Length: 319
Image (cartoon, rainbow, N blue to C red):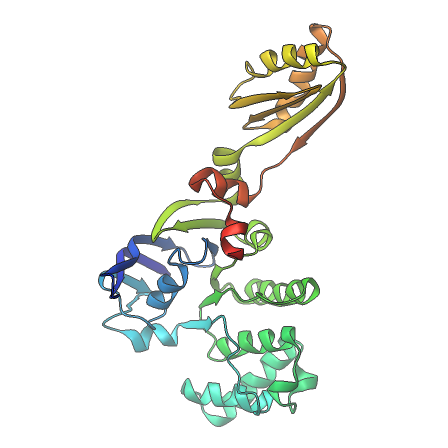
């Protein structure tokens, strides 16, 4: 559904050319929900704008739903919904009128546009707000309306560019509940950019990480965390001498990356902490070392980004 090869976008500046996107290669299958991560300035929004025909690439190619973004932009736009970072509705227009106007712009007849608007109002729980001015809606209601606007022509592909930014946790959860219900019902392909790593971790089947205009990782959240970050086992023992001895044992565990001792506490990074913790405790017991406490900490996608780039995605996004 989304296929890009060697996609490049260069901007001119007073200091010289700036390569915002440098040779992007993407493949997204029908029905996938893919999260596109990276700090501000990584090239995510530029990439999405090229994939949605809003910005011509400097070089390379992209094919969306079977059509080329450069030579067949109208065909691409008929097959995609796009929810940008800003609110898409006019503040002094009524909710239902906005949807009908969007449908007419997508070449639906008046009757078909009204019917589709009413379907989406019910689907996204906006039916009680149909005659309200858009300016009077809450943040979560506005974002659900933005999703409805993107779905008026029933596209098979939906691009969501940071759809929940600025929403409170309840509104974020409510928005995602509606998006996932729509996906289950229609089987649409969703391409998501977000700074909320929990969204990418729990919603997406695949995560792509972009930095400095280049795609640096592409895999399932589970495999990225296992391969690039790994689990952390934390164990406390009776005394510092035992902790040093335990550190030597930890370094011999399968796949152990590093073991650190701090007083009576030991941490060891390794691929599968839950499977190896019982074996580690058994080895400690054989050496006469008793663990006072032990736990496994699972990695986050921010740990993955830290391992890839040496900096936190959360801190980069905040900056």
